[in-house]
Image (cartoon, rainbow, N blue to C red):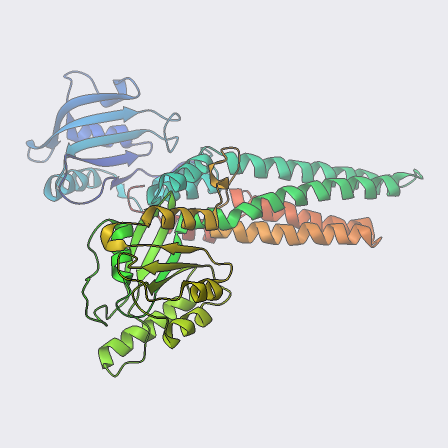
Length: 461
């Protein structure tokens, strides 16, 4: 498959030590040679592959030096895109790197679309679609655990499992076809049903294992939407600051100080939390505060985890009890804060209201109880199982949806066999399972979906 030569800035825009302009395609060396002046008497095509060379970028039109650079030369197919690649390492800065990019575009390269380098790696067969998607997961990973999940997917752990399941289905379908074509043997139908049932149940069990990891995998990829709620001045903003380890929220003794929703990503024992500090939920005549309270109620409905904060130095109020009622059926951790002050709260009543939910006591201004809270958050969603290195986690929403559809299809095949439906009917559902799994790794997927997926990548990747 032949493509034109593309170029883009592959490092974040702004000031820094270095910036990289990347070229990929059959003419990468020719274009690079037009603007790079390095070793005398030696063209870029003569450089050894995977070597780096000192020199200057020259404007061929004026023969002026544009930049002092190091140029990396990598010959296909042993590259990320399986094409010839040139990477020009410039000084970091908006002006210099853009001048270099404009020069290579002027001399034959085309500006790459978002994600086009990774798209070429996929189209040229270096990686499959699930591995390509893992590239962006790796870039966006907010914790070590999320990064490890993305790395495993990039290395093909999920792909290999999907391919193995598809091969089993394919062999089963071939077995069914042979028996349909040669029906003269008496035991063919019974044997076909037995084989189909055995293989289908095995595939279903493997799919169920993957689906069971999806909730945790999705959390690692996207983060837990975590909402801090409580009456005004119970310590919600102090809790946000303690988890973030910065003073992101205003902390005062004045009720109603937080007027809006404040969001921050934090890493709690490898679990990424999209932490939301809300305005205290209470009845108020203040128009601005009332808007904040309404926003708080809305984010509460969308939360994965609720941190319900109570004041150790106040008696339980009707508003506190209303909050417990509002979060009934959700994942909640109850936090009794300000334990450094004299106790007025009825802890027996709190335990009764909390029921099966974890209960943690803190004195946030004294930095007490944070470790216990972080342990409660981690245990609530992972209970230690995330440390298992032999588990293949599914974290991508597209993959999860396809796995669920594939599970439904294989269950339909099993039900058909159990009901004694003609074998070719069950074969349709089995074939559908094979196709759905193929969509995960890109072996049976529409071109429009591929374009849509790669358009979400950053420019230069």
